[in-house]
Length: 333
Ligand SMILES: [Zn+2]
Image (tube, rainbow, N blue to C red; front, side, top):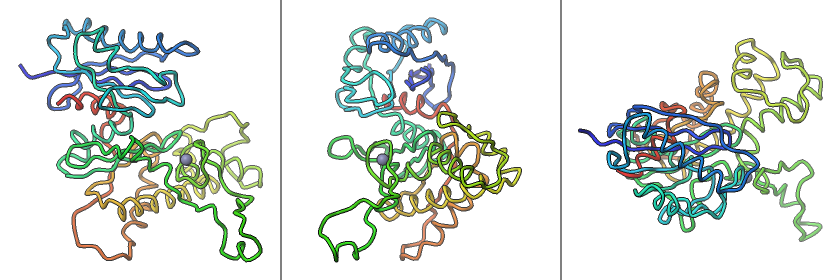
């Protein structure tokens, strides 16, 4: 019998556990809401429960499983399964790998969700067959991962692959400012990212950034099918697509801008790593790739810096919601 693995994608809103075959096929899954406003112990229990339920529903025990992988939205030390910090949920400072290994009696590997989403696409999705893949996932934020020769690149201290936080708009206005003063002054219109830095790619092209720009446009009186929205309202990716299809002037302009920003981000990725494949995924890309990809391609194809010819490509992710869990399962292979 072929080996089976379990991959769990622990997100801020849901926990998804997948039973994954050796060839990456998803045999079964379950989804539960992530517990909110609780201690980390409750979240750890929920992850354990999702695994036990998956085993039970499929008449399996841990003896039938080749390994378990868990993906969390935050900074993880993969070697030890220690979760350093999860900004949007409560698994910070938790020895997740060790705790679950002890409770379940099987090795449990832990990694960052976007790194594992990229690993999933590298092994079984639109990056399969390539030696090097960079994944960029555009949603509420912009997450990413780098996989070279089958290995996730973590850098010196697990800080690599944060393409959402590469600086896409340098917050230094001009050399002329330094004629009057040696003091560095932040330009008045510098855009602050959720991470605290200025000018990050994520702060210019994520769904959150797209919402901010649409609000700016509405405030300026630009015509749009999207009606006035308050500060907390979310514009879903599907609504963006609908507005694009209706040739909405505001949404079209904002999405064109975001696409160019992502295109230049891809160009930077190419100049840094020259990966064979850049896989674009996440809710915004899934919904709007037909509009966005040609613009992103135009920027990258227009690269003036000399490079040898190759079949390197930019493509849309194939595994959708399953990428992260499948990548987590692949940690064990
Ligand atoms: Zn940032």
